[in-house]
Length: 165
Image (cartoon, rainbow, N blue to C red; front, side, top):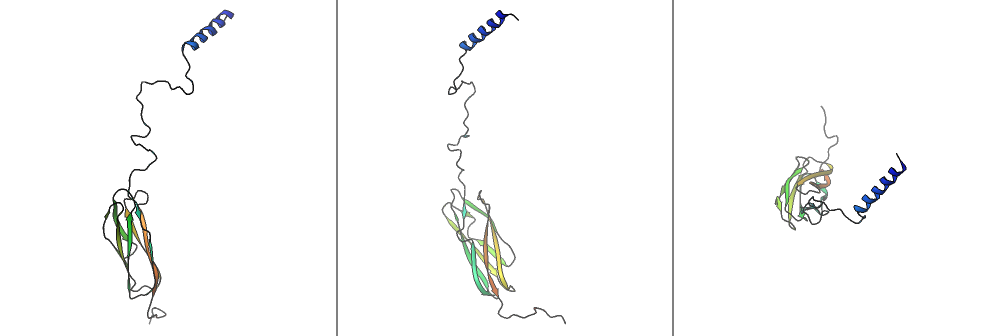
């Protein structure tokens, strides 16, 4: 390749560079494609959509010491601190000695409902800890655990509890 060919090539490259302006870092080249929002139609992409939120300020009830011939009854208050209706799917006790009933399965925003719990202490002795699992449509926490705890005391205690004859 001759010296003249190299100069001509460099001259042509300089002409092309002058004819096509190079965009500066702040210049955005136009495009024929339509602009699409990164927000997918939402005004604020970091905000969560409206949702229900189950709140129970006193999720544990301590009944202290009770005679084991009694039943313990307590009402747990649950509120909807969210922006849409809270739906209680179920309230499931951990064992057959505990019963739970819901006053309302649909709770409007800002409203509350109760879960009435009844624990039968018959035949129980010592520390007791029973739970009720509340399942809801709260997207942040679909299961909430309520607890009843305390000590069942026998009025008459026989030791040993059984005798083999």
